[in-house]
Length: 133
Image (cartoon, rainbow, N blue to C red; front, side, top):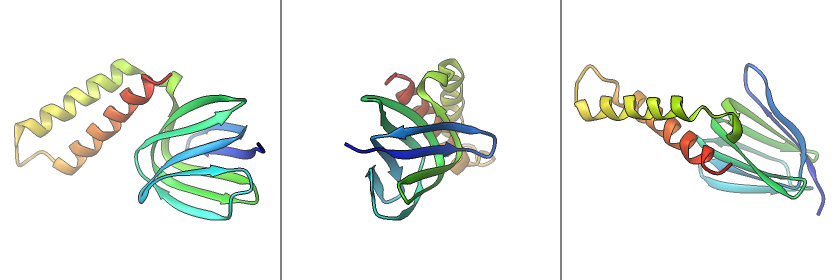
């Protein structure tokens, strides 16, 4: 099986730059996979796991929104935030999940429910991905 160049970048840093055999992304229209020599593609991403196969080993990353661009055997993921499963601080993610759940349970009009739901989604996904390492 061939490879494609995978670049996952955030506004702050490059999270991963490697030759990947396969990449599976959380697209807004559903999960999609990319292999070597994939046709050009541009897709919006939602919060969730990104799985890539590098040197016959699966690696998981947390992605919080962004875009995926595939062109000329290079896949570039421009993410709002991204981190490898091994880099996820599970204590911090659990605290964020607990805070978001408390805000949503309060049913307080002063609480921005959409923001709390988004925080809960990010925290739950981080915890799920950290468990895959």
